[in-house]
Image (cartoon, rainbow, N blue to C red; front, side, top):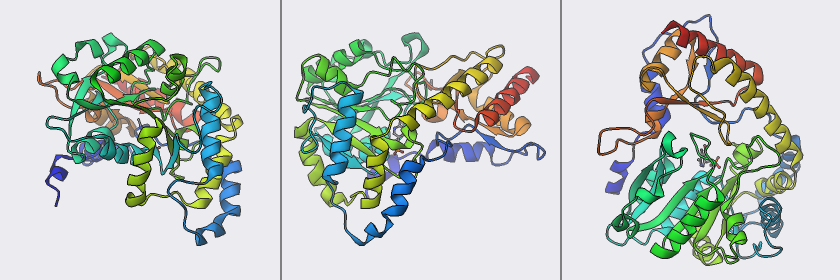
Length: 399
Ligand SMILES: Cc1ncc(COP(=O)(O)O)c(C=O)c1O
């Protein structure tokens, strides 16, 4: 077997299961999970109707490139959402459907890494763990950039030594960030594009939370948008990942896309042909319906707004917790160690959150950038999130 497999760490939820495994929560309290970032709002019927109507299409093989209709829907959505110049991002050359961004992030890394000696894949820390595993299996090493409160939870790109930049082959931006919700600014993205040119690496922006924001007039800025604004009409060395999982409450559909530099899309399509990850035709049709509709996404945001307002009002008197820039996560400081906090909360209140250190790696000074925080996914109903907030408050008051 590939010896690099031994470098893969257990997923955060496996660590969580071990932490909570032998505890006895109060049986009279129904379990509430704020642990997994799986949207719980209903899937939009405009998508499920299409899926039902097109189920017989399972009789046909799909193509890896996806239908023209789907790629056009994706290119049109990007053009509307990121105010791109008409026809600068084309269905033919700049977008590919993917079976959720997880597989695409992993697969793209396998293509993007050149495997030069000392090759590095840059990742924020705390992070979405696929960045790390994808780097190892592509024959590179991950280079973790701590995202700390003092820097607004954005990596301190100025602190990275020149010799490290020279080894960078691929840099992951996660904006809006999981777990902090922090959004990179236009200026920060421009700086990264300049660095990508200077050190010749690929910039991969994971934007799967980009549609979960709170101010309808101010959606998070995206990498494609910034490319346009600075006249980089070929999106050179830039790609973005988007998903219907969070935007449209369709995590089980497994549908998203990658878009950007045509010179990167072409070899990636070749790779995908061998990898065998063509999207089933009925999923493509359902995805077209989802990308073409914004009303359900606005309703979705409205529900998150209600939840954040209600939960923050309850937690603010007892916890250091703020409204994120975007996403459905609260990234809150814990009054005791985050793993002890998580275990105690489960044992006393039958409620699950995720310790920040499980999303993080130990630095050379023995610290975990995510420690001292827990991640709470406000994915359940408003009522359940409010009940969860009261339980957390009671737990903190009991400490
Ligand atoms: C930062 C980030 N990127 C990508 C994904 C993958 O999402 P999907 O594969 O459902 O598109 C997730 C899922 O939680 C995530 O948090």
